[in-house]
Image (tube, rainbow, N blue to C red):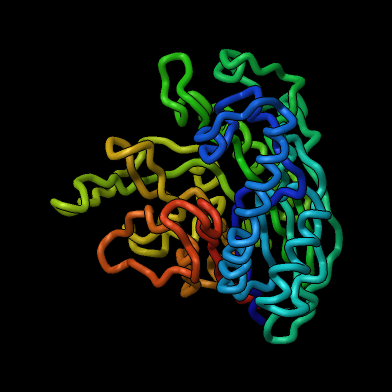
Length: 371
């Protein structure tokens, strides 16, 4: 009895226009910065035209990447709302996979831009086992006080104990797969942001992600506390954690040749979830040079590959799936992404140097035996 689960940050699956770039150049697309724009009305017209022109290629590529996961259950990040999800599934994904993901689950979370986590499911697995929805629980309302995890590092960032922990949500969905229980915990942690207080973006926002990881762990521990603990239960944590435990630092250039140096980080918010064997990062079953799900660059002086997208399995699921190794779908990556030796893939049709692309992230998918 096998179920295939995937996680994918689909990068701003929106059904509305963002006109904030008229007043904030940081939000203005680089295309519009090439032109003199007379007033806000003209800006709105041009932004609508630009967005529509780019969206079709982008969402075809997003759908191709999802189709290649062959997933029974999709955990998505950066979805605007159920309307956007329905339009994407009907207009794009349906053309790739047919009548597949009929069941969609999401709840509005805390993100200021309105991007949320979502779950899409088939009615059965590819092997015909029923996927039965039991219930959905949002944890977007949880505060630091609720879970007792506020501390001085958060206070230094100006975060109050009464504020909500999750920048989006930890969406909990209970299922039966062929009669066997499985719970999904889907989250999208705080982004790294810009440097602050003399620290780089990752370090300055680390306390927020640590708190989110602590909260996810506490939610799982509390859920199973009255039934013998979480270790022997079937559950997975999926999502974009905006943090990494290791990087592949890229040096050199296309003339002299690129170099790739794997470097382990001394600390990561992901460590909170892995400590003491609480769960296993299944992607770490892949070779160290082949775990990356995102290419980061701010020019030739700052380039690396890293894992930001995770499927963490409970000890019970990890034990019963010792040979399960996740797939990472990289065919939707733009051509600017620098691949380590022997990892180049054939891109989907119409992928560009920077855009269009399926997403800045790569989908991760794994098949898990539920017996």
